[in-house]
Figure 1 (cartoon, rainbow, N blue to C red):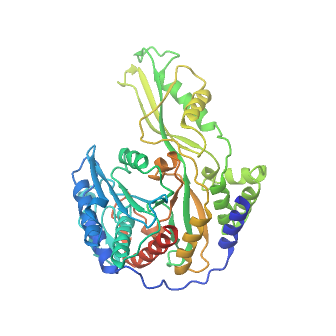
Figure 2: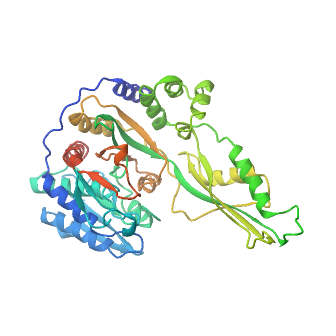
Length: 461
C-alpha cells in the first residue's frame, strides 16, 4: 500500500494543476466571519478566565443551530476548560469521528501590537487579533460548518464529535483528558494542522495533510561544583565542563530515519525542488539507504531535520558572582524527536554523547508524550483530495510531518490515527501565528467552509 500511496501522491504533486475558482460556500460567509470576530474577543490565554465564557459562546451557536444541550459538555479544568459537542449519527455502533481544535491562544501584550490583540479589527481584507489564525480561524469555520449541517437536517452515518482543548499552547492537560474520553474514536481530524500554501501572488502551491509530528522534549544538562575564589581556578570548573558537553552534543549526528509520511512528503516535494537537493529528496524517498542522497539532504539545513531527531542548546545559565568560581552551570536542550524513537532513549543517548557522569541529564515537565505516525489512510487521502481539488483541481496533496506539537500527539498516543486537515491557505507573508499583529485573510473563509463541509460528508458516512 505504501508504494501505491506514495506513487499516487507523487503523481498528484507533479501533475500540472488547472486552477478554478472555489465553488459557492455551503455556509453563510457572514455568520462564519462573525463567529471568528467574536472568538478573538475572548482572551483565552494561560491563567486567564475567558475559557469557559468562550466555550459557552460556542455552545450557544450550536444550540441555536439545533444541537440539544445534553449533547454539549463544557468542563472547567486547571484554570481553563474543554468542550465536547456530539453530533449524533445514524448508527451508534460505528466509531465516531473526532474533530480536534483548541480554544486557547498565546499571550499578547497590547502595548506591543499596532491594534489591541483582543479587539477584532477588519482592515485591508484581513481580520486582525490574537488567535485570528491559531486556532480560532479554523475553530470558527468548523463551528459554523457544524451549525449549518445541523440546520440543514443532515444526518451523519456515525457520530461526529467536536473536541476543543483549552491548553494546547501550554501543558495540554485538557488534551490528555479528551484523548482518554474519546479513545474509542475511528480517527481524528485535527483542524490545527495541515493546510495549504500560496505564493505571494496568491497562487496555490500545495496542500499538506499532517500525519505525524516529532515529539517535543526539553532536557537540562546540569554541572555542579564546590566553586571557590576566582583567583584560584580549578580543573573542575562547572562552566567549562558544561561547555565541553555541549561541544560533543553539537558534533553528534543523530541516526537517519524515515516513515511512510516523510517518504511520501519528500517524494512529492522533490518534484518541486530544483537542483541536486530535489533529486536527492526523490532518491531518498525511493531508497532511504541511498548514502549520497542522505548526505545531500543532511547538508541542507532546510531539509536535514526531516531525516532525524534534532537536539539543540537553547538556554544557558551559570555562576553566581563575577569574582567566584561557578557552583552550578545549566543548559537547556530542546529536542524534536522522530516518531518511533522514545524520549527515554533520547535522554539515554544525550548522556552517552556527553560521556561525563558529572553532567546530569534530566527531562523537564514539558507536557509532551511520545506518539507514533499515523498511517496514510486511503479514505482520508481521498476525502481531503476531493475537497481540495474542488477548489484547486490538480493541486499537489502532500503528506507532512510537523516539527511542532499539536493535540494530535495525545490522540495518536492513545491509538487513534490523527490527521491535520486545516482548510486554510496562507501566504508566508501572512503568517504571524504566535507573533505580533496576527491576522487571517477574509478571502479564505468561503473556501475553508466548503472544505470542511465536503470532508465531513465523505468521512462521516
